Length: 229
Image 1 (cartoon, rainbow, N blue to C red):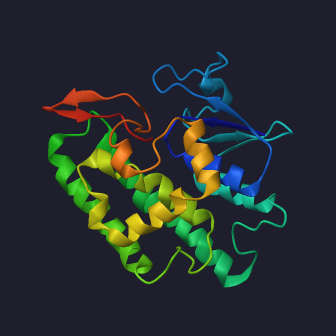
Image 2 (cartoon, helix red, strand yellow):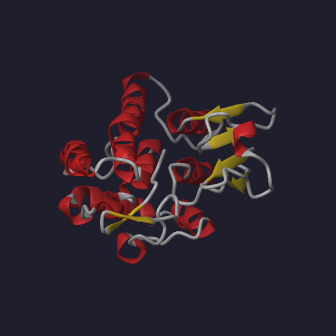
């Protein structure tokens, strides 16, 4: 399998999951500005959507979208189950994957776009904060999103929570989320993925250095970044 990624982007979630599952795969980096791969190809010819992640399967098929790729990784992970196998527990796990994708991940997107009107930024951050408040309450008395057991939604949540410093929001405002993120960061699969993508391991050291796009622009007197798609 081959994972197309951008350092620090949402593709970090399937990267971690592949390592967690112990699966064999290769990585191909995609440049944000040129949309060319590290081996010189036009990424749009590989994935017409033009954004990561994209997972090329051994048979040549291409999977896109984080929840779909994560679910596929679980399906081929063998004995190392990264999602509940059946019943209501599995449905709850899929609910979390979709909540993170649609309510948290996508809440970052307009905040990162350089053409977003300045008047939208404060309401956008407030909207994102309310979505994080919901997860904060859920995690106050739980170690992981599904309770005592680590699962794929934890990886996805960790990935997007890392973007918080780029939005003038402090992780310390969500102590349960910060505790959760630190616990995920301590896993060997996460350490290895962060090292492979040349990303800092924690908020204190990362600040704006390993933002998903690594490209910043000054807009209205402050650093702005293109951010996640």
